[in-house]
Length: 176
Image 1: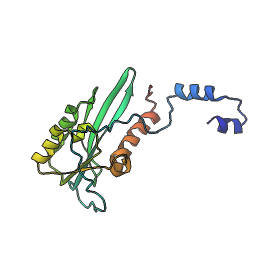
Image 2: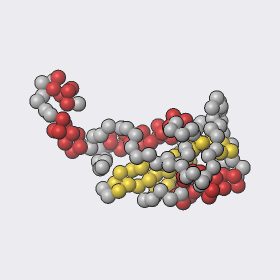
Image 3: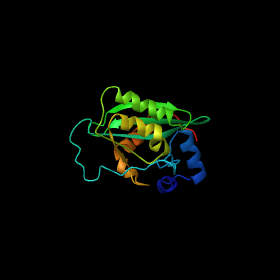
Image 4: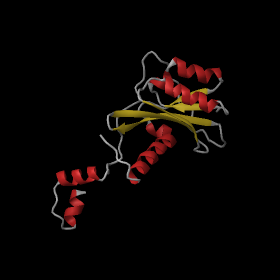
């Protein structure tokens, strides 16, 4: 941005540009804290979506967690979407990364119907015995992205990008 403004003959330095962008609530969209830390005691399931043609609603659901910066700390948002329709089936907010809010979102989504396959990353909330037990109880196949493969869960990652981009474009100030 500094170089672009200088090309327009504005005399600015990088610190001024950073300050003004911060004041306007503008920030680059890039990966933030890694929330997908597996627990070594939890089972990791194989990725079942490779070469799978998704052709109908409730064939594959997906879930992920993102963080929302607040004035003091973070809130964590989990969402469950149907990959075919891209419909958000349920979501929950939490001020901690304990798995209970993820289980609550899952149970809310399952109250209406169920998928054949449920895909997540390898985060400890999704690999926990409590979480996988809910899926197994409903006879749902469990699929997990490969380690470091955010592209495997691209539709929910796109949801997070849209959520954070829209938040910035509507003038909602992000801190941090």
